[in-house]
Image (tube, rainbow, N blue to C red):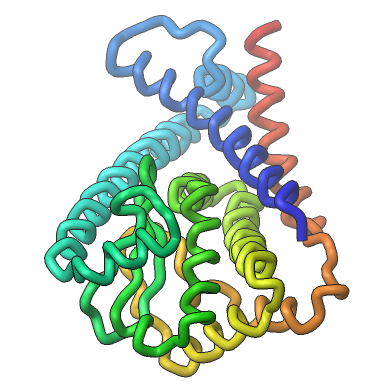
Length: 282
């Protein structure tokens, strides 16, 4: 499984969402500031609806713009608040000695790995600008040294790749613009690919898949952690069965294929928006 796949999904999602979001933001600014935003996409939609005798749909269009922008702002704000609150809570349960030992052992920057006193096995990476790896004493007690190494290497991939930020952006695009179904598909598949790539890093570091596989099985047996109210990259929350099967049969790797019906619907919706935009510029 190649990193190129996930990179392509991220770029396409941001391009689709960014194109629509910028137009909606300009429309909202024009509406509240009283600007005459020439060539604005949503204004063209208004004119087109009037021309075909469907002016009543203008209000639906306004509602869509307001919903998308307000929902995006709400999700961003709640994400930041929940992340800050959880970081503060984690600091309260910080195990200083183990935290220092793990950071020295893996030669990381100061504070890159945080060990918390918590009986449930936990291994996540959180934070946008400076991602941190969080592991619990429950995880350390559950795994042997080689398995713990595999989990840390896995999370180091997420940390280096800034996956918490990328996962949040994809989640924001998919939820705020649910009328473009391919965004939800990209969000789901990106998570799977990144987990497999993180597993591959651990396998490469240890020259075996035995330790990462046994760590996954132990955490699966221990039970799934309750979902937390913010976006993070977790070791054992995503497609565990798929990842174990991939480890057992790596030669059966295949490209993830985009579903034709979802791609077609999304293309038609996005193309319609682009046509309005091109018409406005003509």
